[in-house]
Structures are given as structure tokens and as C-alpha cells.
Length: 433
Image (cartoon, rainbow, N blue to C red):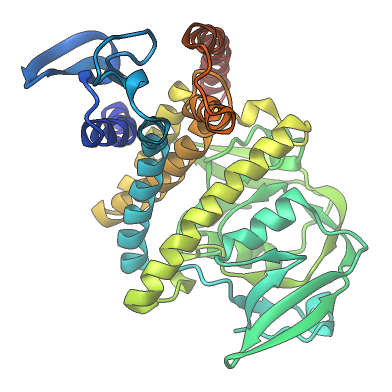
């Protein structure tokens, strides 16, 4: 069931992408020879009008094959015989439809659970945040120079640019008025388990810090903490409460966790860590803290959600290139299917509504991610094709189709080689984890 649902989701997102190409091709009078979902052998096909429609066995790709797309053709309805703006709209429509799909899902999800308005949830006594004048209930508008629309953007800001001894400018709203302040992070020295999780009523599903205490003890991403030192833990909120009331020291703690259907207990020795802290907690899509925002607010925060997703992908690519993010963090189709399966497995025990919310949230991320990646100016991708069209607009004449085709062919070969490497990495990570 996990695999079926994962493949279905992946297939829907690819279908939406190819549908964008298809609809704009038809609107521009381009001859579409075949519209297919999936890769490999055909499961079935039929012809309607001039187009053959196919469903193939592996829902890990798709295609909208247009006459004259990669070769010269005398047909006036061939892709390459249309105006540059018509061709540009057809190519751009694929990624754009992914953004539209993510936006529609965001509308539904925010209508159901509310928006993660970037609210300050609590301020620690004597902290940098208290000295800066922040209070629980304040809404962060700007943080360290970044515009903040949803609470998760605060996490992204701290993740990619960790706090240091430098001052952090903050703009926040209180009672409808905007205020500005400056926060000077304080250096903290504590023992930590080396995980991130949501401090809410949902299960304490963890993200492991590399080389942290949990990582060294064998805990993996998406494991669920269900006990500590013999005390049952039912949620992230309960886990947070326990570690807040029982200061971690160098002595080991017994952590009980679930990985899929398997439960195990390991001894974890906290590691002393020094870092800079702001001293306040914020809403990072905690279901219990999300705010119902009305019709206008739903539209507004759905747009902010897409902005957040695009921003996250771009920053991830930036830090991947600079080496600040491990290549192991990159997932291909196999890894994505595995992640979707894990999301389904974890949420299914809490009812259909939770399954829908979890999978919809993952679909939003995946669809926006696919949209951004396809717009990268890499040969064979939509972005590479758009780049050639922009050159054509600037030059006022077409680039030699044979030369452009050769560049895209080389790009395709390199992408396939990269896909093999990523797929190998996906499979390796599945077995290791």
C-alpha cells in the first residue's frame, strides 16, 4: 500500500507537469503526437483525434511529444515552426502548472488546519529575546534581513545562517503596530541529544543532527521517540516537557524509538555543545498553534507557502553547491517514493484526515520542488530550453536546431548519468536506514 500510494502521488505530480505542456501546446495549435504518463513499456494506449494517449508501467516520468520538437519539420503546426513566444509558453507551462497544483493544495490544507503564522510562542526568562523586548503573541515580519511570511521561514533562516555573536535585526507586529528591535544572541553551553522535532501534540518524529548523540547511537531521520528513561512519550510536546524538566548531563539516557513497526531501545550519551541562542520559540507549522485566517488569509498564506517552498529549494541548491549541505540529502525518484511511504506509514495510525494532511503537505513540497528544478538553466530540462529561447529573442533569429539539439542531447546523457548516481544513493540510504 505504501508503494502504491507513493507511486500514485508521484504519477499525479508528473501528470500535472506534462498536462501544462499539453494544454498550452493544444492552445497554440501545435501537433501533439503522444501524451504519456510513466516510463518504460506501455500498459495501455488509445488514440483520440491526432494524439495517442499512453499509460506506461513506471510512474516516474512522462512526456508530451510534439511534432518538430527535436527535429526539422515542414508541418506548419510543428513545435519549432511556431513563434518563440508560443514555444516559450508551452515549455514554461510545465513548471508553472506544478506551482499552480501546489497552490491549490495549499488552499485546501490551510483551510483545514490554518496557517503557520510566524508567531512568538514563548520567550525564555533572561534570554536575548526578552532583552530585545519580544513577547509571546508577537508576529515576526522580518528576521535578520529576510521577509518572513510563514513560521518555517524562521527555521530556514537559522538553519542556513546559524546565529552567531552578531546582532539580528527583527521587525515584528504587536496589536496591529509594527516595531523594530535588535536581538543579540547569547552563547549557550549545554548537553544535547542532537535531534530536531515538532513540539506539538503529534508523535515525536525526529530529524537527526549529523554526528550528534542520537546519530552516534543509531537513531535515523523519521524515527519516532516513544519513551525516555522508561517513561512513555506520546508526542513531541511530552518529549519537550521531559527534557525541559530533566536537565541532560554527560550520563547516558535510555531512548525508546519506533522505526516502522519495529520498536527498540538504545543508550544515548548527550554531547556538550556550544551555540548561540535567540531564546524564543515560534510556530513552525505546529498544528495546535496554526491560526484560522479566513478566505482572504487562506489565499494570502497559500501564496506565501509557495514562496517558502521555492525559497527553500533555491537555498538548498545554493548550499549544496557550496558544500554546506551533504549530497546524501539529495533524493531521486526511489528516495521520494520511500519518503512518501514513510509519511503514509507514520500518519495512517492517526486516521484518514491526518493521512491526507501529511500527504498533501508532502505533495506541495514535491510539486514546487519539481517546478523549480525544471526551471534550472540546464540543457534537456525546461529551463535549458527556455534559455535558448531567450537567446533567440535577444538575437532576433533562431539558433541552429541541430546545434541546440546536440546540446540538449549531451545534457540528457549527463542527467541520466546523474540519475543513476542518485538512484544508487537512494537505494543505499534505504538499506542503511
